[in-house]
Length: 454
Image 1 (cartoon, rainbow, N blue to C red):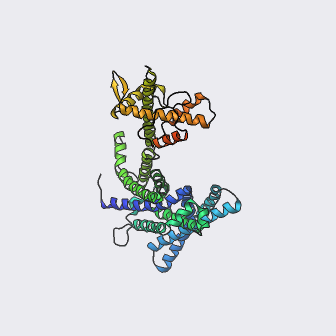
Image 2 (cartoon, rainbow, N blue to C red):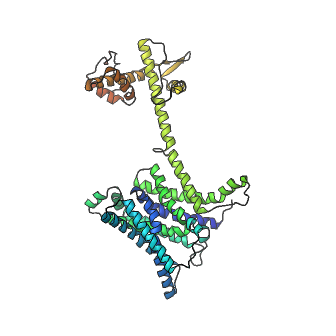
Image 3 (spheres, one colour):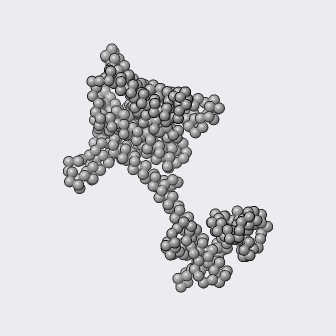
């Protein structure tokens, strides 16, 4: 893979477009309006066509073009974005229909109006379907600012990203409170509708600014996926914004690298020797999807793998505690049968493996020693087992006093709860029960352990 200054400009432009879309995308996701971005990418069409015609007329009248045309298009998109939000609210309120239905009516109507304007006034304009879907970021960077090598698309998308950052910085409190509790914001004197329209204008400008560079696929991807990925990693709004921006930037870099490297690695072994690269915008969408997949799997709080690891750790802890309790009861009754250590919800076939793991872990903690293949409680292990049995039997006593349950129901319930009772809570239960010596089944309740409150 060779890297040139052109690759740098492509990556920077993709990063600017991705970041500018990710910022309003966070608030759309939190407001449960993510698909509004898809609708606005279409409803912006009449504003773009009108602005394009005005910019064309202005260029012919004044002899100027370029940046003025882009600015007019952005303003037109912002106006139609606000109009989309206003009409959706009006249709929902006056027509007494749900938000999705109101959005569908406005979405199709404005898009149809845009197509009509294209047909009437811009029918001779050629639209490349591939350019619409995937953008033209590899070639658009050749359109530079003046005599410099800085792409116009980079400047435009950076400007929109800066406007979005200024909006968030200046109205962070208003955006936060109207996003999470619009009714409270209204009661406190804020203007939820005004904040909503400002967010729609920023979203519309972001979509239009990025559309020409990276196409509709990346625009919608960067509007939604970084925010969703960030929501799996953090729940704090400021962190959510930072992570979403970071994911968008990393996706842009990773997308261009994948566009240069992945096709040759995949297709050349299959005999397609002429496939050297692919679309940066499309591979950026793939890159953001891969980051989302990693977050779904490995997120510390919400990841599938992390949740499975927590369940396994908890199951192993339960097995260790069940083994400790079983060994204590075994000594108490002088039984010779090995205690069961299979946690609830685990297949019985796993018990031999779980037992070996539990013995190994307890041996490492110094709670048991292994004598002729059988675990034997040590003094620290006996103390831990005593606390567990004390928790179990005190909870049975507590349930028997406060609930009219048969005696055969108490043991199973206490077996589940004993794993969650810490020493202060056990001490409180014992105090409330006035320190009983026997449980409802007549079994002795072990004395207070050293770690309990006295």
